[in-house]
Length: 235
Image (cartoon, rainbow, N blue to C red; front, side, top):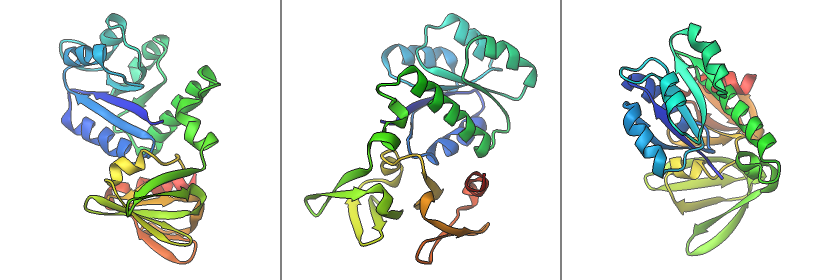
């Protein structure tokens, strides 16, 4: 089950950064983005969101005011360029506080904080960790047949327009799906390293600043906007 995310920020560039980070994590789903907190509040009244990335410094309504005066169900990660707001944010029971510019590594640590808290609060469903813990496979439709694929057998996934190719240790399976959608069906140890590639990090043999070499000598390029993935894998 994916983690439904929403972004509220009055800066278009800040929204783009978070959109990119969210796309790189398979179990995250971006539901919507807003540059207007009032419109976002109306959206939340009728929509399900698990995790909200909320900017503090916004005109008319600040992020702090939004939390204090809106009945919101999502957990909140505050984003801001001003470190001095951190204490007040934590007093409002937020998950984390991200200081701009937000690196992918720091972003990913916040996601793991959310996962840990959610698992502790929901020990029976374990929601966002459910796929990692209880599921070891996925079924895909290929040539009008439902094929079971073990996650552990997947080396990488790449995209061809509206199709994805799932490369396993034994075969390549093609199914109709967008890579961004398919990514949401994968456990968190799968990472997107290029707009056209997702890798199984458990299958990495070596890596450089330019590519990842998987078991069997398969070389996967690392996209320019995904360079921080290397730092995450090395940590």
